[in-house]
Amino acid sequence: MSIDGYVDDAAAERLLLSNDADFDRVDAVRAGCDAILVGAATVRQDDPRLLVRSAQRRQARVARGERATPVKVTVTGSCDLDPSARFFALGDVDKLVYCASPSLDSARDRLGEVATVIDGGDPVDVHRIAADLFARGIRRLMVEGGGTMHTQFLTAGLADELQLVVAPFFVGDSRAPRFVHDGDFPWSPARRATLAEVRQIGDVVLLRYALSDRFDAAG
Ligand SMILES: NC(=O)c1ccc[n+]([C@@H]2O[C@H](COP(=O)([O-])OP(=O)(O)OC[C@H]3O[C@@H](n4cnc5c(N)ncnc54)[C@H](OP(=O)(O)O)[C@@H]3O)[C@@H](O)[C@H]2O)c1
Image 1 (tube, rainbow, N blue to C red):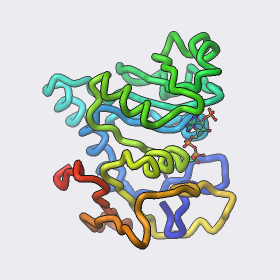
Image 2: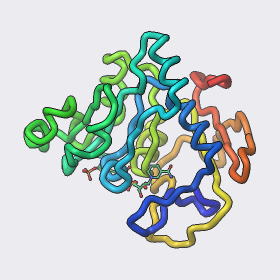
Image 3: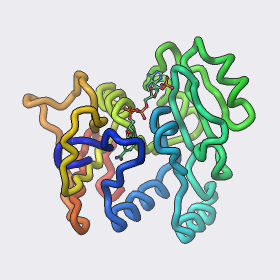
Image 4: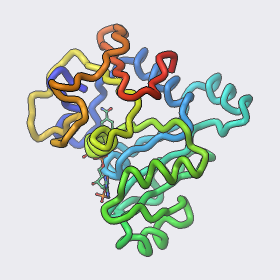
């Protein structure tokens, strides 16, 4: 996020906040996960690949008996998703779409060829997502945004770790999306989160917060 807490600006093109060294660190974190989740708005606006980029890390995953890249997961109420988006088109890996119950039939018509469409409830419930992913063998999930998804996983108390990277500039435009939205977060002035690590990476800083006893300092 920017110094003032934004994860994008208000323009159509994606804003790059990190530097190359931090993008490579994120690639390593991805390579250590079983699945990566982004909200449907991020799929529509950023058209992310969500692949492990490093050939060495992909090979190491395959050597461990895993797919080269983690399972991709998204969440939608409207199911307004393009089956040709890179989320669906790239990577020899499962793509899971947790869809709100009323849109389930239209979602299966539209995306059934390129993804596994799952009834997530109405609205989609993040506890249900976590339980279903666990049943599918997913043990380590990386939630990569946007703010709507961060807010739900954090307020539900489902996140074990928060990795926050602060880029050295301001966005200064309240129309831009923020890191989180309003919500009842478990960490408050009366219950402070545990700051587990501070790491300078060139001109950005990584803050790692331990949010549960499942936090893995080495992870
Ligand atoms: N800097 C970064 O690291 C970073 C990372 C990721 C994203 N971003 C930015 O974040 C922005 C998007 O964030 P956002 O908060 O607007 O959107 P988002 O979290 O990416 O996606 C929100 C969408 O997800 C679906 N959704 C989420 N929770 C749901 C629920 N419980 N039930 C049903 N559907 C649900 C809805 O999709 P439908 O509308 O389809 O119903 C909702 O509109 C973009 O500007 C992107 O560039 C930044």
